[in-house]
Length: 360
Image (cartoon, rainbow, N blue to C red):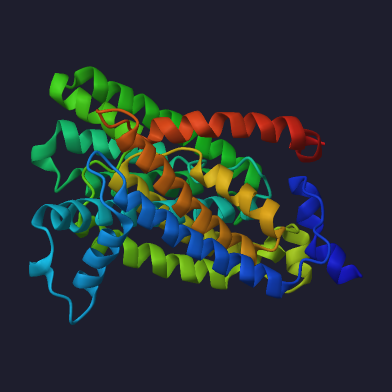
């Protein structure tokens, strides 16, 4: 009885009702179903665009490239270019970024025991935005915009931790406030960069800030995907530790878990994949806030299942948003705009239906 009370203590904090009779076998089946749905969504998305291609043709093209016996020369050259060179890397990158942001959101919400926390809470987005603006305006001094954004995103989080650290401890409230401060400083620096940049650089900064997969390539997939997948597996493996941390620091110490140590490990890995995602595609909001909640509504509060469910939901969500971005109009809409338009009503719903349970 006591164990069950501890296991579901975070449930009341997040404002969700307990899911009775939801066995682990059923949860595993649900995860498999989500994975299959993500693959189906990706396949349909690849076939849709300004130039529609049938799902069967998409399957044949992908199979020709992946199978050791495939013959690419027999495929229509235009179809092969559109599917394999343009859409497949774009969809894979969307899935990867969705997994990164949604997983990081679940980790941050669990560590901070706050359902309104998102991966950008520690200033990583503002720091990455400043790094990207530096790379755009002073391109001759930086290796690339992506590298500069990644470095400064990581620096912003490091500064947040240094600012919040007191007496060998990092209080959650202090850490969040430090993140707000650091984020504000870097946002001001981004404004300065906008002010001093020319028209071309200003347009580049604005488009980067809105987020998108316009320039997705196989190079990005090869660089980002292995790191995100490896980090996701580590975080998933530590899901049971996150369950304990979600009960509170005192309860964690009672159960023999060092909260400071594991918070640092979890937050560091989550920050790594967030910085990597933001530096590659720009700032895409709401994914890290919405998807963990959706996962909890489906599977309950156990982070061993929330983390993979949120990751797959994040991948599907970005696939859908990216498909809308490139098909709704003749000119491509930045993905960050669509995720914000769809995410704002969700936050309103969350505050109206869960606000009393969250804020007491």
